[in-house]
Length: 209
Image (tube, rainbow, N blue to C red; front, side, top):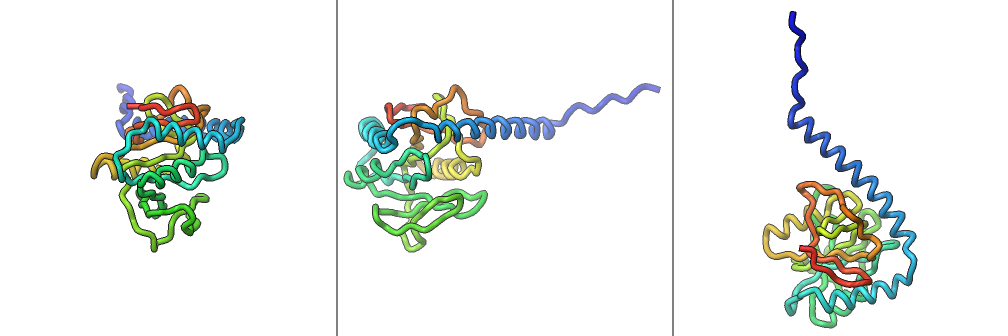
């Protein structure tokens, strides 16, 4: 009696294996990137001012463009000096708001000194009374980036979902904001990962695509 042959692996199982391998690769890089950013040697305030200067000199912005930033947490590169100068130049500033797991971010207008509410994962955002906004330029925090515009975040996928949604409705520029030491040879990425258009560090600003 002939021996039954094992069925070939299905595309579903192959896809699941690929997804698991991608998650593992991202988790490993994330651990390394977190440790590397925490160990950054240098004056973070100087780095923030230098990055702001490079952004303003290189990243093209139309007058009145709404720009989304973020409130820096712990050892992130702080965009506050940049946001202040953008506001002085007449650009409306918005901050992201986490609505819930698996959802895209929304954005609310913000001026320096306005009150902020606590959000998930240590984030802070404007209250519901603040005016909503649709930014055309997003200043994006990250853990690691590469020369192809791939970005590694903390794994919740908020910015990927948000950029996908915004780019479907109109031109949207994603600018990674990080220390130069956060650059790596390659960030593992899947089909749903949205790429950066620019990267700005304390050493310069570079168009990535």
